[in-house]
Image 1 (cartoon, rainbow, N blue to C red):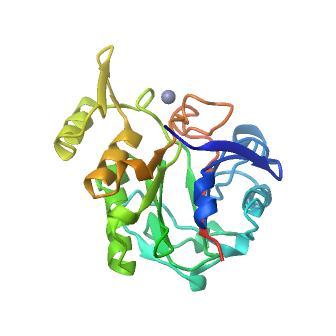
Image 2: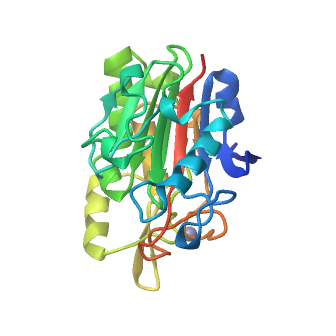
Length: 271
Ligand SMILES: [Zn+2]
């Protein structure tokens, strides 16, 4: 059962897990509803690296973060290169990529921190955000897991990063898997399907054949990967919403054929 709920604040609609906020970590995934962007980027595009007006993007970002009493200058953004590098950040990196894409942290797809008020912020149009929270040690991680990142097991590597950087134990971690393209819509080539079968041998119900086409369920793959790494099933909240199915809620790179906006995934420890 997913505990993700939809809320709206400062005009921006977003999905969140309230039990995370109650335990000390604000987390959310924005929708496209409620911002000031127009055209293919309407309404709440949060991506600065697309052809949208940067002033509108910054306003959308500020409104989204204000729902959690965060300022955009507290955010840390990375370039998201579909790799598997995860870096440790603190207050020194605050503001990187927040106002200018060029200042994003280079060559990485995720971060870990133990600093309250550092807002981890990543961007999506079909790829899947993975959030991790250690309520005992008060540390967090967030990674961008598209199909390439999933093949490289970036979700599992985020657990490893929390273990090595902060002494977390996988059994203590909470995980959230946000909205992304679902097994309903993510068609892949038969050659990639063969690689998926080998890479994730023993995983259940991650590939489907329908009308001679192959479909891959990324969220289900990430969930099983986290469980295999020691995260307890009852501590994983997977959002079942598909970004490609819901045009009114989400931007989708695949559905919109590349010209589209980005939703934001936010994770920040409370003071
Ligand atoms: Zn779908």
